[in-house]
Image (cartoon, rainbow, N blue to C red; front, side, top):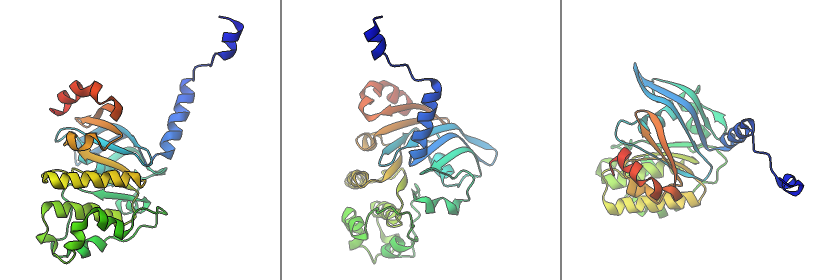
Length: 261
């Protein structure tokens, strides 16, 4: 090799450099999970899960029923009977925190069952959770109603009188109003009419533009394919595949095998 070539050569980064870079990225992440294990009683459900969500990024966690996707969200929120490993939210370690200390860090959890109070009106459900002091500008009440106009029209309707789609919109709107900046959304498209699914997709696109970080649990690959920046696939409580959206076409065969799509 010539002297000129030697001058231009760049030393390959060592594994220590890579580890420092990875640790730095995780420290800046909206969510960084490392070696997460979780249990329900004696049942060991998660086996060393690792994933990250960067600020302003939408990440989709895919998998069949029973793969461990919902348990991952519940473990983040401290809702499993046992967990170990590291869970950092905007740099704060939460794996040892009680559940009521996690949301104030700016986490909004929308569970699959939605949790709408049937005896309260849509407006009362919407304003029920306290506003979080996260310093995140987030989204105003007016902007939320612009995303989900049905909710303003149905403000005085009891939760029990709302359609399934309206309940899902309300469940998402409720956590937006708190000021959360990291959204954990569990199967929000499940069982809904296509027009509602499209409305939820548009809402997620707008939230991403406004700087929200989103971890989306989905079985509906068609719904998530154009929304997420990256995809993780779970099987038997472990992450078995990570794909960037630009690489989806190259992994279609693997996805069909893992998801049955």
